[in-house]
Length: 388
Image (cartoon, rainbow, N blue to C red; front, side):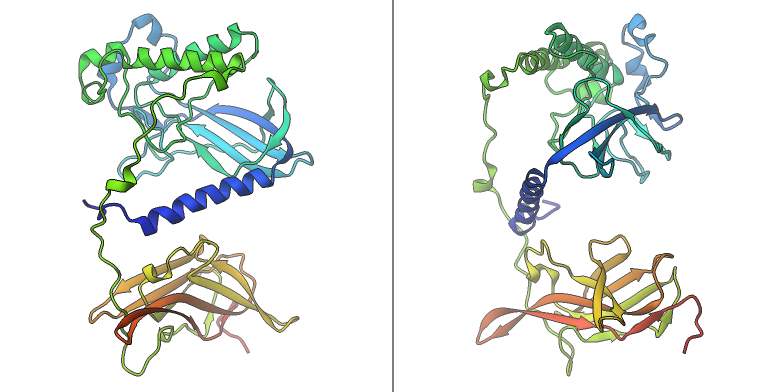
């Protein structure tokens, strides 16, 4: 209810974009190398249910120095010339209270900490040269339980893979890539304490054992190259037929008298320095009127090229340096403010900002969507406010 139900206009571009990115990755695969490195993030997390953790067998707990998983694993992908293609980081953390870190789906709560590595070691097991197509991303370990659940899971699958002789020196990393989870999973012992995580293990105290049984079967099938023989299993329900959308259609756009969509309401200053923020406000239509804007943009920052007498796009709304704010006003009027946070590395020169959008107006009693664009005045970026 809070998100107004199923908004098809929002979901479809996401799905289409994911599929397109997979197609691009598949079509651009090339031979490469994978390097592996691991380290520990000290003072980076805490266990939010230590009482439950202490209910695990003492000899098992004593195998580990900490009651949280501090290990971070990084896979680095390069082409055969050593040029970087991407990195995949597996690091178990869950952000709380605004402290930023990629999610772990686990009991470890992230504090402000980070890790960096300038070099990685070549993968020592398997082939270190293989086709690779990957973007910079994070690998989220999907273990919604204490660290012993993850350790037991990895141990069982390591044993299964190596017992088949298909993998030597193997390493199992739990990666939750489906953006969905089956609620919390604790060990049998943690479940008995019935704190939040145990009480939220909705399939009962033997949930982890059931997962381990399934994981061992999957690992065995992988090791024996018999994945195609696995049963398909129950298919997920197709919810789209019965979903509701409580979000009304975007209303008709109106503009101030004697103005047009794309006109500038608040103009830029004549000159800025690196590190400043440029801001310009336009008469705008509702961004929802633009529909699927994949491969398009609401914003461009452009620099003038004296050599070719042309404008060159240096930033879009996908750039970290830009911000696009849409403000719905009164009388069905709205405006868009574009900000450009000028990086310190920006070259001096002449710039302009452009805004692209669509307005919906009523013509002949029917709503008609029309594209528009607006352009700021030209402004200078210089190391000094004094310029010729």
